Length: 193
Image (tube, rainbow, N blue to C red; front, side, top):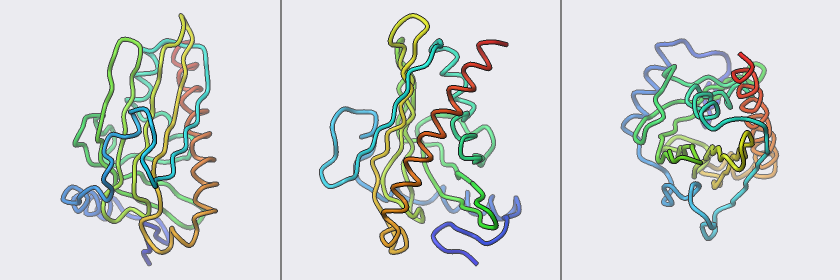
């Protein structure tokens, strides 16, 4: 059974490969590409930003983000494993919730790689229950001090997501906090290695 990317039970690798191949041909399902890495909101689109400050170095934050460390916070895996953080990369974010598994298609739409900032944004594709994008950004704000940010500019794309908007909002907030905690933990662990 499949509904808005949610499936009862776990998908086998061949099924995930088919979903990824289909996502490769899918279009973005929103019209504000790259907006989460820019300042300002998009009219009519919910905009939520979550940040923490942690000790660390941008080089370490960059490497942990390239390994998709924040996604460990929601126990998600990226398909394909080791997907490059480059514009145009299509991927699935796959996460299990009890007996259900969610696999949603996204595409990397923007990367920022500057001396004091590194991050990326991925956008939702046709077939995703949400329409919009999510960005992960690390900024070196002082020597050995980072600001990690997760920014979401997205709204419901399906009737199920529209029905569950209050729940989806809480889940997004919880996911963002878990992303940030997992990313901070990965930075700390790598720095102490």
